[in-house]
Image (tube, rainbow, N blue to C red; front, side, top):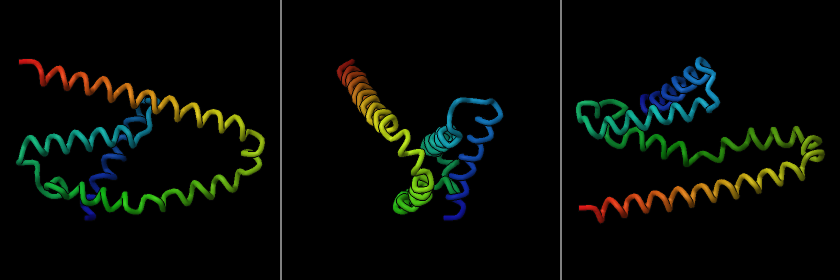
Length: 128
């Protein structure tokens, strides 16, 4: 489990180094997730890579364990919000409007992506 968690954190570290080194406008963990995804896809294609933390189900099991305790990560964010209540009182309406707008945009983009993907898959299935 430690090796699996280390692999996840190393991918995140690589993402952080790339983002900070190249001054990219992306979060480092997103780049790290892309590296982890590529590693898992390569593991599935080339069985020689399915060793150690990349063996089948190892990283996935560790990730599920982390997700089971994800709520613990919201405690520091809640403490940070409580510490900034005066700022929240000053800009609460603007923050609320931005949150509602971003949720709507996210829903629309997600629905659009789903529709586009389902059409592409339907075309591939119907093609000879």
